[in-house]
Length: 158
Image (tube, rainbow, N blue to C red; front, side, top):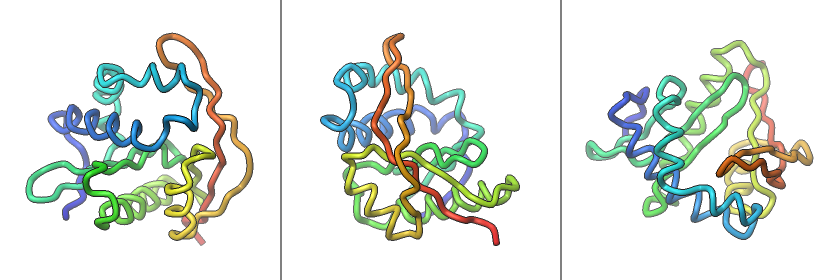
């Protein structure tokens, strides 16, 4: 597996992965209107502007996962659901932590949907700590939703 900065040509695949993986882990744990608003088209609209803060994981020439960092936030870490459990996410997460540290931040944070126990176990396994409730505001279909999340934090610089 290779990790590299995303290029514009990667972003359609990133959108496809994001859509599939998001829908594999979020329905039933977020407001129904948010789930309805997370269409494939919506992900394709969102991703091109994120190329500069995205790292992709490539296996056999194919993008199979990605991480997005925004300042001190590890905003997105998603892997093609067909490859869950195959060791793709951990290197992506470690690389995202390094980018947060390189940006001069001592602590990285991320939001995890309360009901996404698989993701919560993954982050805890990699040294992240639950720092409390985080009502995460998002927009879908022009409507604002509050997604019940937990804020996870990790020290990334001594």
